[in-house]
View 1: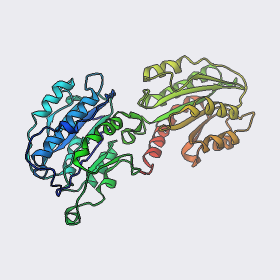
View 2: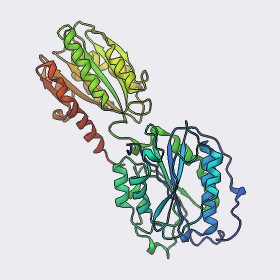
View 3: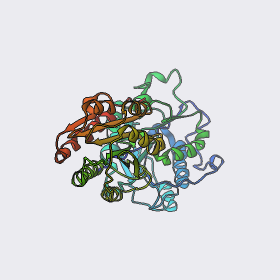
View 4: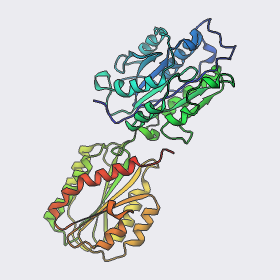
Length: 429
């Protein structure tokens, strides 16, 4: 089963006019060896290496040394990063999968034994192959680790990458490029897609592309590459609507709710939480209960697994008291969302059964202006005008009302669907 975590794509580009890079000679380049800092992270990493004839023997060896340097910096192991390799030319094929080697020494030996296959530089086919075939459970995909793919390309693609890249992005795939030099004026006529980098990357902000001016400085890319691979929070395209948010529930615990109905609200909160992929790097859940006062039940850092969150929701004790919704929104922002990670979408789901004794408009507006996406769920005596004031525009997508507590469950799929629709509509840049 393919997971929603994503591969990372890096392309390396050569200039065929660089006479200092001969196609013959030793495969050693010890003078280029970087001073490696070891990173440790949990990622499932696939390298797509260029085996086309255009790369030549010397560059193919530099490519392999680059892979070995990266594997050394990653410190491959079963509780950290795993690394597999696909070689492509006319067609892609797997050299070895993620579970083949569980330590850096064996991995480096396997890399050294790889033979060049030849053919064209069909990057589009390679992207499609990885998207459809590589990150499977049977091949060592762990599910709990982001999928990262690094594609090395000598020269430029000999097929189109736009469609394959779009499908990969829609699967949650992170696409990165490292470009080396580039075509000269005479060679530019052979480039099929001159702006293929922007067509392929997850975001066009510059974070997802690295340019290297010479093959002799390729070793300098090792550390920046590994740093980005290991910065899980920055893997924007590995994020889906289910694993990229901080969701804070703001729960009315006033006297009008009652003990039985309060348990129904908690089940509603649990049912929504179940739909998300919960961990300290994925979606995180927090909860506030309020009456006239407010109580932080648990913050985003408290529980890092889905079961822990569900158990914590079950343990929330009914408080009873008045209804100060405005103060509760302020409290939730200060105690939950002000501490949210910069890369997280901040989603507030407020559930109330009555009109507030204080103003909700000012606090709600302040939350909206600070990036909080607010959903309001009203039950029984909840005031429609307040629900609309709390909710992010458009109200019809963020505000819901039901007259009976036992009908709350009906909103679960609609709320999750709206969260996902909103996430998927975000611009790429």
